[in-house]
Structures are given as structure tokens and as C-alpha cells.
Length: 231
Length: 174
Image (cartoon, rainbow over all chains, first blue to last red; front, side):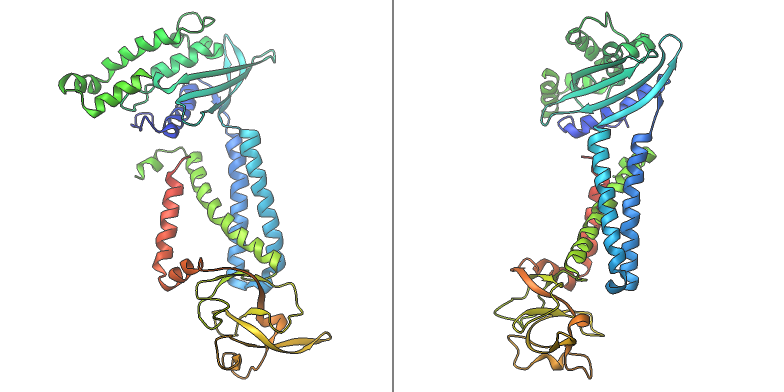
């Protein structure tokens, strides 16, 4: 998925691609992903759909008069399940994109959950990270970063800067993924400088962009690219 | 186009399918809920003919209520004739029985010259309130039902619409 090109001006494309990349990165670090949130959601949703399907079939086969009382209960249960599903999505899942735990030789057993969000028309990725260390202490972090940090101007997701961002901002991940951790994690505001370095690196990795810029006089695509990079 | 689907994780794929199924099933269950509340198998109907002009035009959307069983003369009712699929909207012009006896009704279209005895099933010369009537008209919205007239006169439009809806919901992730 991350190799696919997306439209850089589409906020939902940016967010979805990043959301998909998160579990990939964390499971590569030996985090075990727990699927219970989405499993409950699927169970609630599909039970409701099955009830509707049975109602539909009974109504089609037997007609209204015979199914009247059954339909009353089916409608009731359907909307209760639907309400539970809505509550689950808004009240429990709350945009969580990763829930899991890790057993690490230095850090011990930690549970972690991450919820992402974006504000309308603002290309900034907000991530709420909560993790519990072996002593049972909970740590909550509110991170945010512009999407330009890990998307190039052409709309390709670049994993490296994204992983560096997480490893530098979340101490637990930094402890596990030491080679992606940049500088001193306590010092914030290093992002500007590192972002520049990272983008230079990306240019060498994706020769397509550099050649496009060198060969052709400023085309619309090049202008578009520069604009996105300025932000 | 479908590469976007195949690259999804199984759970994400199931979620996309679920979103589509929920749109369809919610629409259906809302309709059934309305049926339960109004006690009518078909609580919203569209006028298909001009037999009730000028009260109702072709394409008007009618809202039915089937809980008042003591139907009076002058009420507009929708009824089904045994052996015919299409419900008919006409006005009650005469009633027999009621109270202890089962209520029987005679109907007529405002724009028709004769009463409905011709339209009833063979040998039937009145309607049983409790069996034939699917509701009395309690409200209407003019003209919007024309969409369904188009859909029922050109059934392929339904397939096209459903197909477009399905593809959109499955492929979109908002």
C-alpha cells in the first residue's frame, strides 16, 4: 500500500496511507497487534446485517401479515445493535489505528495504543499515543507533524522519516528501534532541521523527481511540488 | 480500480463490505420500522394514475396510517385487490357494518365516473376494512414520487443505481 502514489492534496488519502503504515512499522518491531476493537465492530455490524437479511427474506417469502410481530422485534434489535456499533466506533475505538503490546528485553512488557486524527483542511497528522510500562504506569503523548514530513511532493509515502519521527517522539519506540531515533529525544523542535536533511535524502532515493526538475522548465507538476514542499 | 480493494487487509476488506451492507440494511430496516409504527405493509406509496385528480396527481407521495380501524366516509384509503399487485388510492364513499360487525367499504376515484366495483376481484362488491385496506392517507408530498415512477417504468435504472451505490461505498474510505 505504501508504494502506491496518492493525491497529496487529499487529506483522507494522506491520513489513510499513514494509518496503514503505522501497524506495518510497529509489527516489524515485534509489536503484537490486537484486533479486538475491529473484531467487535465487525461482529456487531454483521449481526445487524444478518438480522436485516433474515427480515428481508421472511418478508419476501411470507408477506407482511405473518411477519408483523417478528418484524417488530427485528427492527428493535437491529437498531439496538446499530446504536451499540455507533457507540463502539465513537466512544470506544475513537480513531484508534493500533492497539497491541510488546515483550522487549530492555523495555519489558508494554501495552500501547495509538489514535490518529486530522482537523479539516489542515494537513497535519495528530497522533495520541498511550502506553503502559511493566510497572503499570501509563504515559500519554500527543504528537503532531505535517504530512510533508513523510510524503514527497509526488505523493509517495517514504517510510524512513515516518519511522524516525515515531522513534524520536515516542520514548518506548525509540528504545526498541534505536537506529531510527534521532538526537536527544528530550529536545523538541529538532524536526525542522531533520526534515530538511531527510528531504534531501529522499531526492536521491527517488531520482524520478530530481530528473523531472532538472530536465524540464518549471511545469505545473514541478510548481505543485515546490508549493507542497514549502509548506 | 479493484487493485485498491485487493491490497486491503482481510479485516479492512470486511469493514468496507460492512459499510455497504449497513447502508442497504439501514434503509430497509427504517422502512420496516415505519411499517411497524404505522401498522401498514407499505406506509409510503406513490400515486400512479390520475383517477384521484384534482386531489392527488400522478407522482404524489402519500403517507399512510393503518391504526384507525373505524374508517369514515370521505377518507382516502389505499387498498390491495386480491390477485393484483398494484395498490389503488381511492376515496371511501359508502360504509356498511362497523362496531360489532366487520366494517365493509365501497370506494370510488374522484375523477372516475363509476365506483370501484369494477376494479375489485371477481364477485367482490366491497372491501373488508381489516383485510384489504393497507392504510388511510394522512399526508402527501407532491411530485417527488416521479422518481419511483421512472424507476418502476424503467427497471434497469434500479440496477444501475444500486450498482453505482455499491461501487462507491466499497471504494470510498472517508
